[in-house]
Image 1: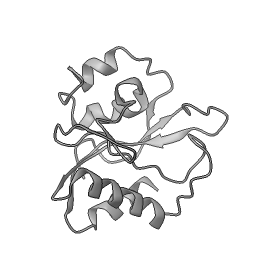
Image 2 (image 1 turned 120 degrees about the vertical axis):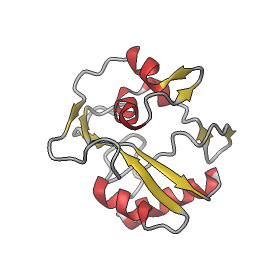
Image 3 (image 1 turned 90 degrees about the vertical axis):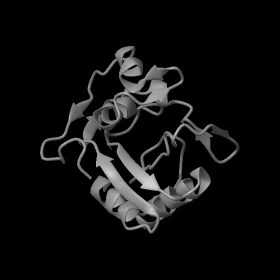
Length: 149
């Protein structure tokens, strides 16, 4: 499903995938009464505004069969916009940088592969990750090498 999500975004006119982390098996977060997840991070170049990028991500989720049933519950795919070239956005549809980015090791581990020095909230991705427990977060064998789309 992660490969399909990356392919759907890469096929979107106005978007180009520039980097991709390995896939990681991660314990559930928030609603922990569910199976483990797979997580990855990608870098993109785009002509879209932050909100148009969010809409492209939501469209890709819909194409892949995402149905929103319960918050933080099981889902076939979840594509988040984490950061957008230093933009700060805060409205009912989008918060950038992502409001929980620096609190979630399952996001920061793959992000550190493709953007370790990205500054968010006064610290780099690697610095934020250094404060968090990474227990249970493991790369999945046979996934792309870090940095390759």
